[in-house]
Image 1 (spheres, rainbow, N blue to C red):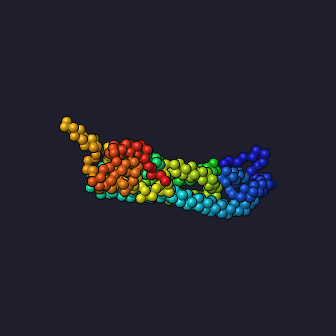
Image 2: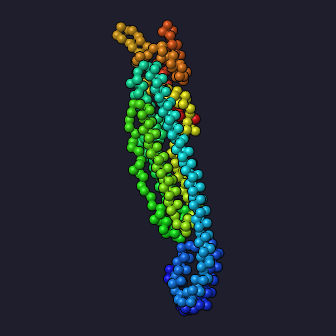
Image 3: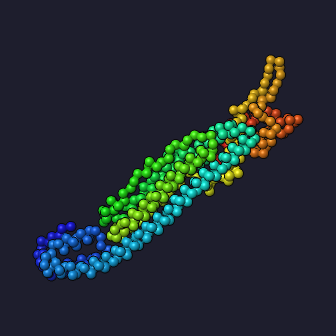
Length: 371
């Protein structure tokens, strides 16, 4: 920054001494050497000549040394503040992502248990696999997942959690928000970020296996976890590489608000394991949804042949074992029907039609995954 004083000569020792004392006092009051102050003092050193130059330098040099030491101290404090803040928020984001991971694993276990129970009751693996796939899709489209939809679909994971996770990673890599950019324009170069949008997971692959279906979703979540972890690592390197004069003016307040806003946004994308029902409850609920799908697909209406015969409404493959199972998992009670489980005694009148009515009601307004 060029300096010119038209009232004095560059060789005026008295003026140089007076100005040096004033600049030294001003620097001590600030405590640190900012970029503008440094440029201004360099301009004066270049303007003064001979003994006047030496007089100015003699006055400001002690203050410059003190400011340099203070800048180093402030730089250490600034880096420590930024590191402490990042460690805290890294834990906060990690806890949320871990909660989603646990929720995915719990739902995967519940789905596998429900499928196994359904398969044992019906002795049909093919139907169990097909119905579980239908239930997974219904959980997302109908809504009984109740806040856990992005954890059931890799496609929703990409569009909802993925977008916010990318924002978190981008904002974490940047260090410009914690430094006064007007005083330190070099930070614009330091805070270069990469685009991680390409890390968004592909849409979920349809599968008849609930475990493989959710494994794909879990893999998608792990990609976002890795991206955020790498971003915090990159940020630590960026903060460490800041020059002292930049690190000395670190202000974590702006970054704190950035982290808070992004976490609030991420937190709204899906509920965590703390809001999810326990695995045994999920297992029962999921199997009930499977039967709610199965009943309409296998309904056999009452039969009135020309001879006047009658066969009450039933279901394909129905037997006393299935009646016992419906009692065990609570469907008979929910549907308000009596299933005796014995060939020699009758079920309640219209039991099959009542189960069909229950199926429709349950698919539209049944139980949810949320506690």
